[in-house]
Every structure is written in structure tokens, then in C-alpha cells.
Image (tube, rainbow, N blue to C red; front, side, top):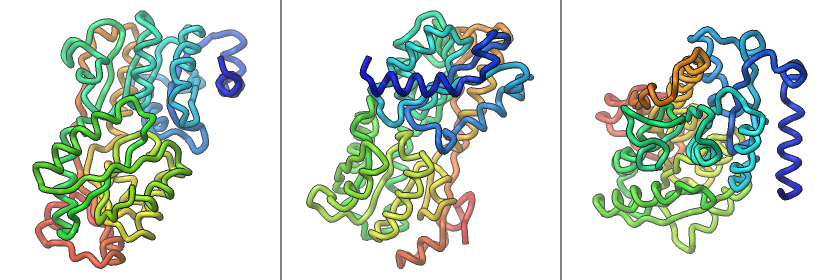
Amino acid sequence: MRRREFITLMGAAASWPLAARAQRALPVVGVLYGGTLQPVPPGIAALRKGLSETGFVEGKDIEILQLVADWHYDRLPALAAELVRRRVAVIYALWNVSALAAKSATETLPVVFAIAGDPVELGLVASLNRPGANVTGAFAGYVTLVQKRLQLLQEIAPAARTVGILINPTSRVKDFDLREAETAARILGVTLVTLSAAAPGEIETALATNKGQSIDGLLIANDAMFFDLAALATLVALTASHAVPTIYPSREFADAGGLMSYGTNLDDVTRVAGTYVGRILKGEKPAGLPVQLVNRFETVLNLRAAKALGLNVPPAMLLRADEVIE
């Protein structure tokens, strides 16, 4: 194990509640996440809510242990193996790369995922109704939404003919994003440019470089790194400073000042997954819990951002939006 990975593991171990380390009196839910502990990982509050709906309160009925990769996704297999070594009651995997690492680490410990994308296509489960083995969870079917996002971007910014897609090149599932985006671009007659950022600090360089091409629109991929609060704020600020009309995958970005979002409410996904963790703690088996598709999609428009970009929002789009931020 590399020294940096060892430090990450030891830091996570230090955050494990002392009482749980001393006597293991309470079952432990092991959270596996590719990001950082500070700020709080997105989805943890919704996990706690889902657990409470099934009668579990942290510190009273369960303990939660969070192991994080600090955006170094290559560390996730070692972190997943550490959760297995500690024999946690359930592994709760936040987002795609963590779920894949958890599945590879164990065929016996229950794994519950909260992801964006098709878990069958990703190889996490055999089928949605009969997941089989030790893995189940909840997902947002975002992959099929890429074309819809591109259509909405064209509607609000008709001049956008060269559109970038910002991805994390270290993600094991980046090819799914790119494949769907390339298909959507061909259908809609748009030139697609791939921009890459492997860490929040690389976002500015990615937008400034544009691979030598000038983009007039931008899609943000559903990588967990972009949902980190620091990266989210950076993305919104930089797209505004570059005056690039951008559509984001969830409402958190529009709430922070981004132009528009279209996608699933991710708190719904993590809350539903949290209820599955609770049900497994009560004795149910992952193989008997069908994977849940959370398909409450929402469009959020930020009129202040549109005005700053000099865009005229079509009245029909205003009527269709689930929420308009003025």
C-alpha cells in the first residue's frame, strides 16, 4: 500500500467513533466515497434520513464510518477492502466508482449503492428486479437524460453549436457519459468538445484551454467530484466568468447561481438507498430488494444567471420549468 493511501486509511480510522472502536456494540455502516470529508459528503444527510425512516439513529442504534479517497479514485479498492476487513454490517457506496470498488471487494458483505446511471450496464447487478448476490441500491437514470439536457441548452442558447462536456478522466465510468453525449450531439447536429478535470483545482484550466476550440455551451458530467461543494462553487463561478451557457445535472448548481439544471433530485436517491441499508440491518437480504429507479426529474432555471449571460428565456421554457429562481 502506498504511503498516501495508508495516511488516508489511518485518518479515516481516527474519525471512527471511539465507543464503536472499543466495543463494537453497535452495527457499523461503512460509507465509501471518492471525495473528501470536508465539507460533508453530499448524500450523508439523506442517508441518515433514510436510516431514521427505518428506525435507526446514528449514535443510538448504529455507527457510521466514512472512508474517503480525496478524489484519488485509484484509492477506492484499498478503502473498500478496509471496510471488508473491519466487517462492517453494510457498505454504503456513494456514486458509481465507489459502488464498483465495493462490489469488487466482497461477495458476502451487503453493499447498497446510490448512483447515477444504469446499474445493470455498469455490471453492479444482474437485473433490477432480481439484483442477486450481495448488491442492491437506488439509482438516477441520468444517462438517457444527456440528449434532453443538450436540447434544453439549445433552447435557451440557440447560438450554441460547439458544446463542451466536462468529465473526470480518472472515472471508471466516464465512457458512458461520453458515449451518450456523442450520440446526442450527432442527433442534434452539435460539435462536441471534451474537457477534462481530475480534481477541483483543474477545472479552471480545463475551461480556459478548451482544447484549442472556443465553446459556446457546456454540459457537466455526473461525476461525484463536480458535486463537491468547493468544486460546485468553482464550476458555477468559472462558467459565469467565461460567459458560457451551462446546463448542470442537478438543482444544487442552479441554487448556487448556475444557469439551468435538469435531472433527478439526488437527495431522493440517497434517501431511498438509506432505507435499504436500514432494511438490511433488520435482516432482509440484498438479493431480495429490487433496485429502485428514482425518476422524479426536475428543471430548475436561474433567471439572474440568464440575464447576466444576455439570454432571453423562451416563455414556453418558463412554463415548463419546475422551479424558476428570480
